[in-house]
Length: 262
Image (cartoon, rainbow, N blue to C red; front, side, top):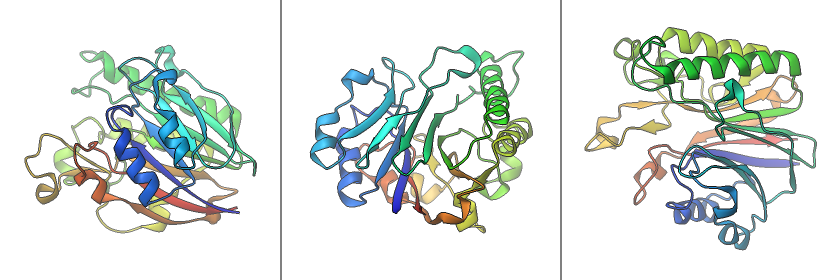
């Protein structure tokens, strides 16, 4: 069975319900993982998604902040939700498809503005969150799994618009990049997007602060699709739907896609 998957930080699923519906209508991923839903689960506008052929959802939510959801046209059941670093945040949900594939959907803390945990509590929380992710995957030894989400780190030099300028900017600092690599190694995860698109600048996020985000093109690749080693060869057709960043009242993130033949 082949199925397509997309991950998208939607920056409020209720505010951007129409954009989610547009994506489902025009692109038709079998599974759509959303982050920063900013909604309690019972307030997520599921009926419109169900009407488009997506009757299944597993989610964790909270009022006004964070929140993760997996919408699916394929049957999916909840397979756990972790609260790494005991933040009390809705940042992880896992769902299991009928073919036995587990999908982990993450929204890693952004980490604030200063990359110093002594003066910025949020940066410390981010590092602690990633450390606990690493330790959990090391213990869990995931198999037949996909990890997606806004991981809030652009790991490679060509995942940011200017590597040298970004080295001291939260999301591309060496301590974050190294820690993300440890998470990846601990779970045996492969970066599906970069396996498909190994060369060149590649972004999934552009700041709202830019007057013309498209022309300035000062992006970062913060959104990721990973797969465990046992299914990494089944992944193909990765892409970033850059055009979605230009939709009316958009999220500052663009959806990232991959297809799996499983």
